[in-house]
Image 1: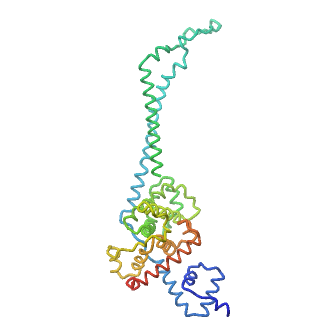
Image 2: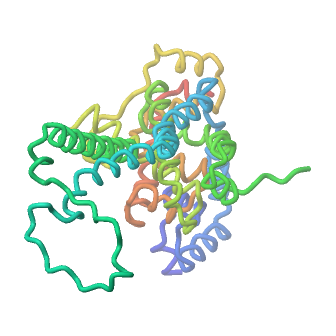
Image 3: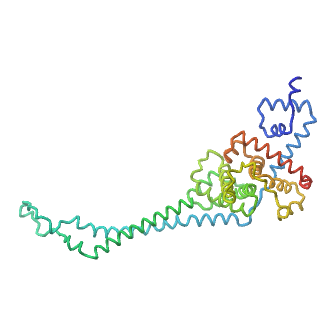
Length: 177
Length: 190
Protein backbone atom coordinates (compact mmCIF):
# COMPACT_ATOMS: atom_id res chain seq x y z
CA UNK A 1 0.00 0.00 0.00
CA UNK A 2 2.82 2.32 0.97
CA UNK A 3 4.59 1.40 -2.26
CA UNK A 4 1.58 2.46 -4.30
CA UNK A 5 1.48 5.86 -2.58
CA UNK A 6 5.09 6.48 -3.59
CA UNK A 7 4.50 5.37 -7.16
CA UNK A 8 3.35 8.18 -9.41
CA UNK A 9 2.37 7.42 -12.96
CA UNK A 10 3.44 10.26 -15.22
CA UNK A 11 2.87 10.67 -18.93
CA UNK A 12 6.59 10.26 -19.59
CA UNK A 13 6.57 7.04 -17.60
CA UNK A 14 3.69 5.77 -19.71
CA UNK A 15 5.57 6.66 -22.89
CA UNK A 16 8.66 4.89 -21.58
CA UNK A 17 6.45 1.92 -20.74
CA UNK A 18 5.00 1.91 -24.25
CA UNK A 19 8.47 2.29 -25.79
CA UNK A 20 9.91 -0.51 -23.66
CA UNK A 21 12.49 1.67 -21.96
CA UNK A 22 11.65 0.66 -18.39
CA UNK A 23 13.51 -1.87 -16.32
CA UNK A 24 11.68 -5.13 -15.55
CA UNK A 25 10.92 -3.83 -12.05
CA UNK A 26 9.52 -0.52 -13.35
CA UNK A 27 7.56 -2.33 -16.05
CA UNK A 28 5.98 -4.57 -13.42
CA UNK A 29 5.11 -1.54 -11.28
CA UNK A 30 3.40 0.24 -14.17
CA UNK A 31 1.55 -2.91 -15.21
CA UNK A 32 0.33 -3.45 -11.65
CA UNK A 33 -0.74 0.18 -11.40
CA UNK A 34 -2.66 -0.01 -14.68
CA UNK A 35 -4.39 -3.15 -13.52
CA UNK A 36 -5.52 -1.43 -10.34
CA UNK A 37 -6.41 1.83 -12.12
CA UNK A 38 -7.96 0.93 -15.46
CA UNK A 39 -8.85 4.57 -16.09
CA UNK A 40 -5.20 5.14 -17.08
CA UNK A 41 -5.44 2.45 -19.72
CA UNK A 42 -7.20 4.92 -22.02
CA UNK A 43 -4.17 7.20 -21.93
CA UNK A 44 -1.88 4.27 -22.68
CA UNK A 45 -4.06 3.34 -25.64
CA UNK A 46 -3.81 6.93 -26.84
CA UNK A 47 -0.02 6.76 -26.61
CA UNK A 48 0.00 3.55 -28.61
CA UNK A 49 -2.19 5.25 -31.20
CA UNK A 50 0.28 8.17 -31.41
CA UNK A 51 3.14 5.72 -31.81
CA UNK A 52 1.28 4.03 -34.63
CA UNK A 53 0.67 7.41 -36.22
CA UNK A 54 4.41 8.12 -36.11
CA UNK A 55 5.23 4.70 -37.49
CA UNK A 56 2.69 5.00 -40.28
CA UNK A 57 3.87 8.38 -41.48
CA UNK A 58 4.49 8.02 -45.19
CA UNK A 59 8.05 8.49 -46.33
CA UNK A 60 8.77 11.56 -48.38
CA UNK A 61 9.45 11.26 -52.08
CA UNK A 62 12.50 12.83 -53.59
CA UNK A 63 11.99 14.61 -56.89
CA UNK A 64 11.53 12.30 -59.83
CA UNK A 65 14.80 11.31 -61.41
CA UNK A 66 16.69 11.49 -58.12
CA UNK A 67 17.94 7.93 -58.41
CA UNK A 68 19.13 8.61 -61.95
CA UNK A 69 20.94 11.73 -60.77
CA UNK A 70 22.72 9.72 -58.10
CA UNK A 71 23.70 7.03 -60.58
CA UNK A 72 24.90 9.61 -63.11
CA UNK A 73 27.00 11.31 -60.45
CA UNK A 74 28.37 7.93 -59.40
CA UNK A 75 29.21 7.01 -62.99
CA UNK A 76 30.90 10.38 -63.53
CA UNK A 77 32.89 9.89 -60.36
CA UNK A 78 34.08 6.51 -61.49
CA UNK A 79 35.17 7.73 -64.92
CA UNK A 80 38.61 8.99 -63.85
CA UNK A 81 39.31 5.58 -62.32
CA UNK A 82 38.14 3.83 -65.49
CA UNK A 83 40.14 6.22 -67.66
CA UNK A 84 43.20 5.57 -65.54
CA UNK A 85 42.70 1.85 -65.90
CA UNK A 86 42.34 2.23 -69.69
CA UNK A 87 45.40 4.44 -69.92
CA UNK A 88 47.40 1.80 -68.12
CA UNK A 89 47.34 -0.14 -71.37
CA UNK A 90 49.25 2.69 -73.04
CA UNK A 91 51.84 2.91 -70.29
CA UNK A 92 54.06 0.36 -72.01
CA UNK A 93 54.75 2.87 -74.80
CA UNK A 94 56.04 5.37 -72.29
CA UNK A 95 58.09 2.82 -70.40
CA UNK A 96 59.54 1.34 -73.61
CA UNK A 97 60.60 4.77 -74.83
CA UNK A 98 62.04 5.61 -71.43
CA UNK A 99 63.96 2.33 -71.38
CA UNK A 100 65.50 2.97 -74.79
CA UNK A 101 66.57 6.46 -73.78
CA UNK A 102 67.87 5.27 -70.42
CA UNK A 103 69.82 2.51 -72.17
CA UNK A 104 71.30 5.10 -74.46
CA UNK A 105 72.29 7.29 -71.52
CA UNK A 106 73.73 4.50 -69.40
CA UNK A 107 75.39 2.59 -72.21
CA UNK A 108 78.75 4.34 -71.64
CA UNK A 109 78.86 3.01 -68.11
CA UNK A 110 78.31 -0.50 -69.34
CA UNK A 111 80.87 -0.54 -72.09
CA UNK A 112 84.66 -0.26 -71.71
CA UNK A 113 86.18 3.11 -72.48
CA UNK A 114 88.72 3.76 -75.18
CA UNK A 115 90.56 6.10 -72.86
CA UNK A 116 90.80 3.55 -70.08
CA UNK A 117 94.21 2.10 -69.35
CA UNK A 118 94.80 -1.00 -71.43
CA UNK A 119 94.34 -4.05 -69.34
CA UNK A 120 96.78 -6.89 -69.48
CA UNK A 121 95.56 -9.15 -72.20
CA UNK A 122 94.28 -12.44 -71.00
CA UNK A 123 96.15 -15.44 -72.03
CA UNK A 124 93.58 -17.29 -73.94
CA UNK A 125 94.42 -20.09 -76.26
CA UNK A 126 94.47 -18.99 -79.82
CA UNK A 127 91.62 -21.24 -80.75
CA UNK A 128 89.40 -19.64 -78.09
CA UNK A 129 90.43 -16.11 -78.88
CA UNK A 130 87.56 -14.38 -80.61
CA UNK A 131 88.32 -12.77 -83.89
CA UNK A 132 86.19 -9.77 -83.22
CA UNK A 133 86.75 -6.78 -80.96
CA UNK A 134 84.53 -5.77 -78.07
CA UNK A 135 82.68 -2.55 -78.84
CA UNK A 136 84.00 0.44 -77.02
CA UNK A 137 82.55 3.80 -76.40
CA UNK A 138 83.90 7.28 -76.92
CA UNK A 139 83.09 8.92 -73.57
CA UNK A 140 84.48 12.32 -74.46
CA UNK A 141 82.58 12.29 -77.72
CA UNK A 142 79.40 11.31 -75.98
CA UNK A 143 79.44 13.97 -73.29
CA UNK A 144 80.65 16.59 -75.72
CA UNK A 145 77.57 15.93 -77.79
CA UNK A 146 74.54 18.26 -77.51
CA UNK A 147 72.20 15.47 -78.55
CA UNK A 148 73.11 13.52 -75.40
CA UNK A 149 72.30 16.47 -73.21
CA UNK A 150 69.05 16.97 -75.07
CA UNK A 151 68.07 13.32 -74.67
CA UNK A 152 68.98 13.39 -70.98
CA UNK A 153 66.94 16.53 -70.48
CA UNK A 154 64.00 15.10 -72.41
CA UNK A 155 64.09 11.92 -70.32
CA UNK A 156 64.10 13.86 -67.09
CA UNK A 157 61.28 16.08 -68.34
CA UNK A 158 59.20 13.07 -69.37
CA UNK A 159 59.75 11.31 -66.07
CA UNK A 160 58.86 14.50 -64.17
CA UNK A 161 55.67 14.91 -66.17
CA UNK A 162 54.77 11.28 -65.56
CA UNK A 163 55.34 11.68 -61.81
CA UNK A 164 53.25 14.87 -61.77
CA UNK A 165 50.49 13.08 -63.65
CA UNK A 166 50.49 10.19 -61.17
CA UNK A 167 50.46 12.61 -58.23
CA UNK A 168 47.50 14.52 -59.66
CA UNK A 169 45.58 11.30 -60.30
CA UNK A 170 46.10 10.08 -56.74
CA UNK A 171 45.17 13.48 -55.34
CA UNK A 172 42.03 13.59 -57.44
CA UNK A 173 40.95 10.14 -56.27
CA UNK A 174 41.64 11.06 -52.63
CA UNK A 175 39.63 14.27 -52.99
CA UNK A 176 36.80 12.37 -54.61
CA UNK A 177 36.81 9.87 -51.75
CA UNK B 1 6.67 -14.38 -55.99
CA UNK B 2 10.32 -13.35 -56.11
CA UNK B 3 11.96 -12.66 -52.78
CA UNK B 4 13.77 -9.34 -52.56
CA UNK B 5 17.53 -9.59 -52.79
CA UNK B 6 19.10 -8.90 -49.43
CA UNK B 7 21.23 -5.82 -48.82
CA UNK B 8 24.28 -8.00 -48.27
CA UNK B 9 23.97 -9.64 -51.67
CA UNK B 10 23.40 -6.30 -53.37
CA UNK B 11 26.51 -4.94 -51.65
CA UNK B 12 28.58 -7.91 -52.83
CA UNK B 13 27.30 -7.45 -56.36
CA UNK B 14 28.02 -3.72 -56.24
CA UNK B 15 31.53 -4.32 -54.99
CA UNK B 16 32.10 -6.76 -57.83
CA UNK B 17 31.28 -3.94 -60.22
CA UNK B 18 27.59 -4.44 -61.02
CA UNK B 19 26.15 -0.97 -61.51
CA UNK B 20 22.62 -2.37 -61.32
CA UNK B 21 23.27 -3.34 -57.69
CA UNK B 22 24.16 0.26 -56.83
CA UNK B 23 20.97 1.38 -58.54
CA UNK B 24 18.96 -1.19 -56.59
CA UNK B 25 20.37 0.12 -53.31
CA UNK B 26 19.46 3.68 -54.30
CA UNK B 27 15.94 2.64 -55.24
CA UNK B 28 15.52 0.71 -52.00
CA UNK B 29 16.72 3.48 -49.68
CA UNK B 30 16.00 6.62 -51.68
CA UNK B 31 12.89 7.62 -49.71
CA UNK B 32 14.36 6.75 -46.31
CA UNK B 33 17.52 8.70 -46.98
CA UNK B 34 15.65 11.65 -48.42
CA UNK B 35 13.15 11.77 -45.55
CA UNK B 36 15.90 11.71 -42.95
CA UNK B 37 17.91 14.32 -44.84
CA UNK B 38 14.83 16.54 -45.10
CA UNK B 39 14.18 16.21 -41.36
CA UNK B 40 17.75 17.27 -40.71
CA UNK B 41 18.29 20.15 -43.12
CA UNK B 42 14.67 21.29 -43.34
CA UNK B 43 14.65 22.17 -47.02
CA UNK B 44 13.79 19.88 -49.91
CA UNK B 45 16.44 21.38 -52.15
CA UNK B 46 19.16 20.95 -49.53
CA UNK B 47 17.84 17.49 -48.70
CA UNK B 48 18.37 16.43 -52.32
CA UNK B 49 21.96 17.59 -52.15
CA UNK B 50 22.59 15.89 -48.81
CA UNK B 51 20.86 12.67 -49.88
CA UNK B 52 22.85 12.46 -53.11
CA UNK B 53 26.09 13.23 -51.33
CA UNK B 54 25.29 10.59 -48.71
CA UNK B 55 24.70 7.92 -51.35
CA UNK B 56 27.94 8.78 -53.12
CA UNK B 57 29.88 8.66 -49.86
CA UNK B 58 28.27 5.33 -49.01
CA UNK B 59 29.28 3.90 -52.39
CA UNK B 60 32.85 5.15 -52.04
CA UNK B 61 33.22 3.45 -48.68
CA UNK B 62 31.02 0.45 -49.41
CA UNK B 63 33.99 -1.89 -49.10
CA UNK B 64 34.39 -0.68 -45.49
CA UNK B 65 30.91 -1.91 -44.56
CA UNK B 66 31.61 -5.03 -42.53
CA UNK B 67 28.06 -6.05 -41.75
CA UNK B 68 28.46 -5.56 -37.99
CA UNK B 69 25.31 -3.44 -38.07
CA UNK B 70 22.36 -3.25 -40.42
CA UNK B 71 23.19 -1.61 -43.73
CA UNK B 72 20.43 0.93 -43.08
CA UNK B 73 22.07 1.92 -39.77
CA UNK B 74 25.39 2.39 -41.53
CA UNK B 75 23.74 4.38 -44.32
CA UNK B 76 21.78 6.64 -41.95
CA UNK B 77 24.96 7.34 -40.03
CA UNK B 78 26.42 8.65 -43.28
CA UNK B 79 23.28 10.70 -43.94
CA UNK B 80 23.47 12.14 -40.43
CA UNK B 81 27.13 13.15 -40.70
CA UNK B 82 26.65 14.48 -44.25
CA UNK B 83 23.77 16.66 -43.05
CA UNK B 84 25.82 17.84 -40.11
CA UNK B 85 28.70 18.80 -42.44
CA UNK B 86 26.23 20.55 -44.73
CA UNK B 87 24.76 22.57 -41.87
CA UNK B 88 28.26 23.41 -40.60
CA UNK B 89 29.17 24.77 -44.03
CA UNK B 90 26.12 26.99 -43.91
CA UNK B 91 26.72 28.02 -40.33
CA UNK B 92 30.22 27.35 -38.98
CA UNK B 93 28.99 28.06 -35.43
CA UNK B 94 27.11 24.76 -35.38
CA UNK B 95 29.23 22.24 -33.55
CA UNK B 96 26.69 19.45 -33.52
CA UNK B 97 23.01 18.84 -34.06
CA UNK B 98 22.86 18.52 -30.31
CA UNK B 99 22.95 22.29 -29.98
CA UNK B 100 20.05 23.15 -27.72
CA UNK B 101 20.57 26.89 -28.05
CA UNK B 102 20.05 26.80 -31.77
CA UNK B 103 16.68 28.30 -32.63
CA UNK B 104 14.14 25.80 -33.81
CA UNK B 105 13.49 26.18 -37.50
CA UNK B 106 9.80 26.80 -37.94
CA UNK B 107 8.07 25.64 -41.06
CA UNK B 108 7.10 28.59 -43.17
CA UNK B 109 3.30 28.52 -43.49
CA UNK B 110 3.70 30.26 -46.81
CA UNK B 111 5.64 27.45 -48.42
CA UNK B 112 3.76 25.14 -50.78
CA UNK B 113 4.46 22.21 -48.43
CA UNK B 114 2.75 23.88 -45.49
CA UNK B 115 -0.29 25.15 -47.31
CA UNK B 116 -0.70 21.83 -49.04
CA UNK B 117 -0.63 20.05 -45.72
CA UNK B 118 -3.16 22.36 -44.12
CA UNK B 119 -5.45 22.05 -47.09
CA UNK B 120 -5.36 18.32 -46.84
CA UNK B 121 -6.32 18.39 -43.16
CA UNK B 122 -4.66 15.07 -42.97
CA UNK B 123 -3.17 13.77 -39.77
CA UNK B 124 -0.06 12.58 -41.56
CA UNK B 125 0.49 15.94 -43.12
CA UNK B 126 -0.14 17.60 -39.77
CA UNK B 127 2.41 15.33 -38.15
CA UNK B 128 4.87 16.14 -40.93
CA UNK B 129 4.39 19.82 -40.23
CA UNK B 130 4.79 19.35 -36.52
CA UNK B 131 7.99 17.35 -37.02
CA UNK B 132 9.26 20.04 -39.37
CA UNK B 133 9.01 22.48 -36.49
CA UNK B 134 11.25 20.38 -34.31
CA UNK B 135 14.99 20.99 -34.20
CA UNK B 136 17.06 18.83 -36.54
CA UNK B 137 18.20 16.39 -33.89
CA UNK B 138 14.73 16.05 -32.35
CA UNK B 139 13.19 15.43 -35.77
CA UNK B 140 15.88 12.92 -36.66
CA UNK B 141 15.59 10.92 -33.48
CA UNK B 142 11.78 10.77 -33.71
CA UNK B 143 12.06 9.64 -37.32
CA UNK B 144 14.72 7.04 -36.62
CA UNK B 145 12.94 5.56 -33.62
CA UNK B 146 9.28 5.61 -34.55
CA UNK B 147 9.28 5.66 -38.33
CA UNK B 148 12.38 3.62 -39.16
CA UNK B 149 11.96 1.50 -36.03
CA UNK B 150 15.62 1.63 -35.09
CA UNK B 151 16.54 0.70 -31.56
CA UNK B 152 18.13 3.19 -29.18
CA UNK B 153 21.43 1.33 -29.58
CA UNK B 154 21.28 1.76 -33.36
CA UNK B 155 20.40 5.45 -32.93
CA UNK B 156 23.50 5.78 -30.76
CA UNK B 157 25.58 4.31 -33.61
CA UNK B 158 24.03 6.70 -36.09
CA UNK B 159 24.29 9.87 -34.03
CA UNK B 160 27.28 9.07 -31.81
CA UNK B 161 25.18 9.79 -28.72
CA UNK B 162 25.38 7.86 -25.50
CA UNK B 163 22.48 5.58 -24.66
CA UNK B 164 21.33 7.83 -21.82
CA UNK B 165 21.62 10.90 -24.00
CA UNK B 166 19.66 9.28 -26.83
CA UNK B 167 16.89 8.22 -24.48
CA UNK B 168 16.69 11.66 -22.88
CA UNK B 169 16.60 13.27 -26.29
CA UNK B 170 13.86 10.99 -27.52
CA UNK B 171 11.72 11.78 -24.46
CA UNK B 172 12.38 15.49 -24.92
CA UNK B 173 11.65 15.31 -28.63
CA UNK B 174 8.29 13.63 -28.21
CA UNK B 175 7.41 16.12 -25.43
CA UNK B 176 8.23 19.00 -27.78
CA UNK B 177 6.28 17.39 -30.55
CA UNK B 178 3.27 17.10 -28.26
CA UNK B 179 3.68 20.75 -27.24
CA UNK B 180 3.75 21.82 -30.88
CA UNK B 181 0.65 19.80 -31.63
CA UNK B 182 -1.15 21.31 -28.62
CA UNK B 183 -0.06 24.86 -29.45
CA UNK B 184 -1.30 24.54 -33.01
CA UNK B 185 -4.97 23.61 -32.98
CA UNK B 186 -4.95 23.35 -36.75
CA UNK B 187 -2.44 20.54 -36.43
CA UNK B 188 -4.46 18.81 -33.72
CA UNK B 189 -7.54 19.08 -35.87
CA UNK B 190 -5.82 17.09 -38.58
